[in-house]
Image (cartoon, rainbow, N blue to C red; front, side):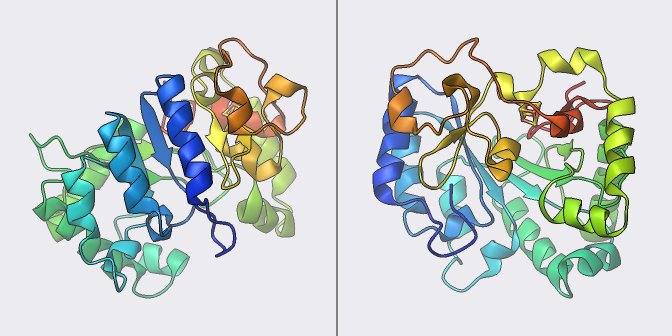
Amino acid sequence: MAGPKRHEVMNWETMTVVQQFVKNQSIATVDLTGGAPELNPEFRRLITLLHDLDVQIIDRCNLTVLEEDGQQDLPEFLARHGIHIVASLPCYLMENVDRQRGNGAFSSSLAALRRLNALGYGVLGSNLLLDLVYNPQQPVLPPAQQQLETDYRRELAQRYGISFSHLRVMTNMPLGRFAERLRADQQLAPYHTLLQLNHCQDNLNKVMCRTLISVNWQGMVYDCDFNQMLGLPIGINRGEEVYLSELMNQDLTGQPIRTGNHCYGCTVGQGSGCGGALA
Ligand code: SF4
């Protein structure tokens, strides 16, 4: 929903288009992402309206935002509206997280997780869902989701008394900064080859672009977030840009999807999507 730079933030006018689309198309789930969507000045207003439409709302939360000035009451707000929180936690070891995200990142994430647990998030028997996300930072395939979830659950409970609902394991897409790093290390082509060699045909029926669309801060529509990163507009209009307002009453079932080499990141091995492993 919100972009990382101040001017790349979805405004209220575009959000009203999103709400209208949700109503017209009977959308069941709205997934809010973009660095720190909670910092969008209209975030709480949007949540309140979507909540009244009885839509499931997912907040892709970076955890540290819950510790920022002015956001002290954010966990309670999210809990009150039954928001499903999905948060990236690249490891259960402090040194690994801090090395990747900077000193203090792990402590800050732990503090946020403790506050969420105290509200019932990720606690057995609670309806408040708190999922964690893992994706490898090296050019390797991710480990099996179920085994890694067991490890995360044991280690976070024993070391820090933290609980969560599910672990989502995702392939790291060879895009953006990860692709730049791989290119600099001359690892980009071998990583593409690794993904292609481990392509699993069965995953084609489950890739996320079959059931979702991605909308950027300006209201432009893509088949998925990865295509948005690549600037590939939704396939429905033969590659021309399309705004959500143009699709209000459009049946999107069975429409073409823009694909490319990066799609092997979704079909590789156990499969991958914003919900984690597909298999
Ligand atoms: S990267 Fe390709 S396969 Fe994956 S969701 Fe996007 S369009 Fe679909």
